[in-house]
Image 1 (cartoon, helix red, strand yellow):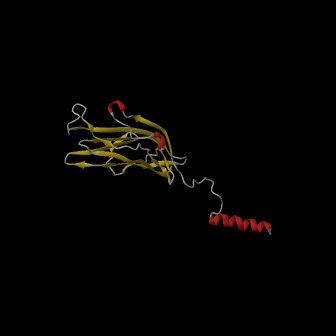
Image 2 (spheres, rainbow, N blue to C red; image 1 turned 90 degrees about the horizontal axis):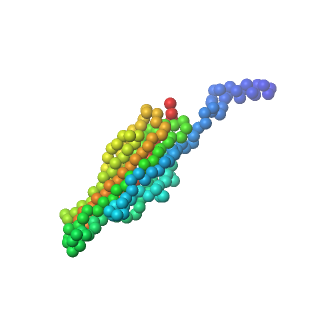
Image 3 (cartoon, rainbow, N blue to C red; image 1 turned 135 degrees about the vertical axis):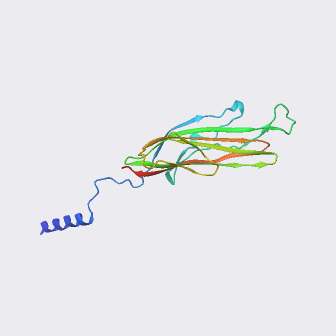
Amino acid sequence: MPALSIIIISIAVALFGLAPSSHAQVADPHVTFSNYDDAATGNPAFRIPEYFDMGKTAADPANPNKLNIGLSTFAVGSIPNPLAPWSIIQLPSIAYDTISFTVTAPEGFSLSSITLAESATLTSSRFGSSTFSGVGVVDGKTTSLPNNTPVVFDLAGQQKTSVTVTMSALLTTTGNQSGTLTAASATVALTPAQ
């Protein structure tokens, strides 16, 4: 009778797929973010501060496939004209920074897409304005990053397992206006490797 039980169990396993899979399944695959480089830095001598903060940059706790770029907390605002401090004419202010990092897929997966996003709060009036300009580079492909508009870099079908990402932000202000970079992130989508 024990032999019959083994045969029945074997048939059930064959018919219903109850056998353990020979391929380990990754329950929640996530990428690795590494090789952080604050590629361009601000210049205090010219009052050009840095925006990206390497010490605050980390994967999102709720989504490990999203990198939240750490930001310094300051606003870019026009500075008094040193040539005529009594003048209402203001010199433009500027803040610029660049960060780069490597994104690596877990074993058995490739990178399907990377979405870059940067957001800034800007003010303007008839006496001045503030502007934002962002640039993203993924695996050598460059595009602008409009304010508050995520940009998707499609990597589907390329079987890329690791790429370098670079993000830049430039804020300028004139006429007593201000601008603040409020968010920057990179979100990665994965696909099973073929």
